[in-house]
Image (tube, rainbow, N blue to C red; front, top):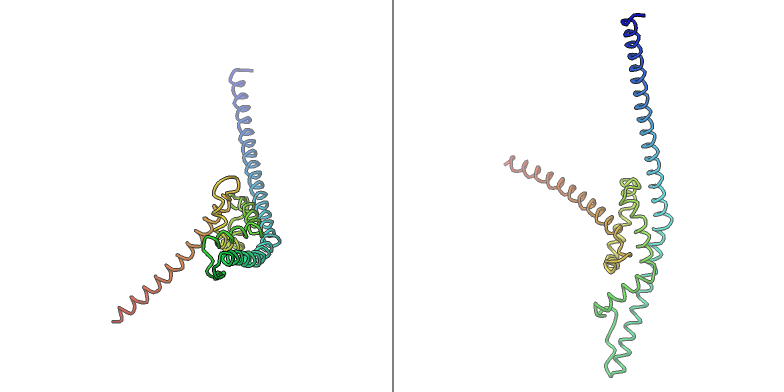
Length: 217
């Protein structure tokens, strides 16, 4: 066998090896892409399932607990205010003064203290703890934010707004409700942005109407 023949055989073998390598590489890339797509689909399905779980938790646990806690709070607050007024009036009588105190003119500082104490003992704080738990899912992208937001943002934001005073008493420490604060800030900003966008549309439409009136003379 001549050297030329050997070179040709080597060249042919090299070409075949290159072709096989390219085919193998293409197959590997395709397999990787298919695997990546399958993984993304699985992650998407898991995100949707987790979103549904969060929504079910809102419907079956949080919302009923809100209704129960706020009814209990309202009832207990009236009792606590009445007791406070009675103590003040009893003390006034004992000191020779007329009992003039009622719930309407109860000092603001005393009323605020009673309100906060009542919120901590009637389930409001428990709901806040539940919100802290589910807020983690929204804050760290474990659920479909758009799906969850559209369904429960109103319940969440209105509750936090009603009980902002309680939230503000927990500024530091393990129970500072950082996830609740973060989610409330984000969802409140979304709501304000939507409101401003609507107002811009109204303003633009009104400007067009005024321009038309001006052009008509």
